[in-house]
Image 1 (cartoon, helix red, strand yellow):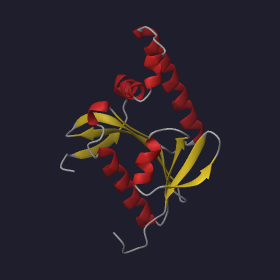
Image 2: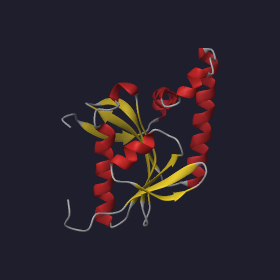
Image 3: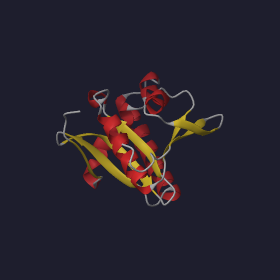
Image 4: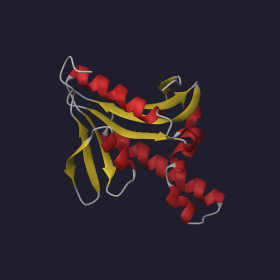
Length: 161
């Protein structure tokens, strides 16, 4: 991928951007037919609930804005522990999807995890089309419930690129 790809920490002034990213990943909101103001309020409430959940369950997680060519393009939230590199959220605005940025970010995380000898993991809801993305990158189902799958990418053996 020839694009310049980087991340930076989320800042308070990113609130509108994060709402736009979150809303763009929730097509079901458009199906409800709510007026713009109501939809915006629902997205804001869901983002607040998400933030509370992540803070409680993953207090050390890093929340980042994905930058392509220096422009905000998405969000990446990752928890790094001694046992794993866990992707809590990766989302790109529609204009930046299918250009290789998500794949490049996951490869970077896989390189990091492999250098530490730990897997990369993520949860994906059963039926979510994103499951194909993760499987294409080599992730396999480590656990499955009725509602979601824990996916895992084992670390590469040392010396294997």
